Length: 165
Image (tube, rainbow, N blue to C red; front, side, top):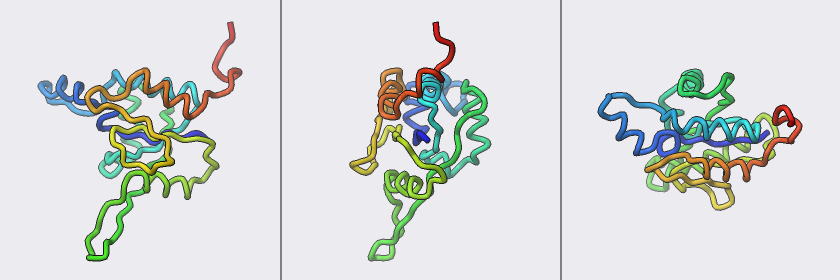
C-alpha cells in the first residue's frame, strides 16, 4: 500500500485561493488543486490519510464528499486520518506533538503493510527520516510538487495505467 498523508490548508487551499473566494464568502478546497491530487492517485495508486487539522473538525464521509464535489473521482481513496497526539510535559502542561509523530503513530498501527509514503504539507513539522513534499502556502499543490510525490511513492506498473497505444 502506498500512502499520501494529506494536509489541506496551504496544500489544497492556498492563500491565493482564499483571497479569491473571500469576497464571495465561500471557503473550502480550491478545485484547481484537485487535478494535481487526482494525478498523484492515478499514477501511483496511493490511498490518502488526512493529517490536516481538518481531521479534528470533520468526519471522514464529509471529507470524501467534499473532495468529490471539488473534482476528485469516485471513489475518493481517503481511507483514514492520523491520530491526534498529546503529551504531558514535566510541568503538567499538555502539549501537541508534531505532525511527524502523528504520521509515525499511524504507520505503526497500519492495517496493511506500507510500501511507500509521502507527507504533503506546507509545514515542516515532520521527523527527519519522513519523506516530505512541502508546498508554498501562497500557491498550494502544483504540477511540479505532484510529480515529486509521484517520484517518492513510485508509479504503479505500466500494465495498470490504461490502454496502450
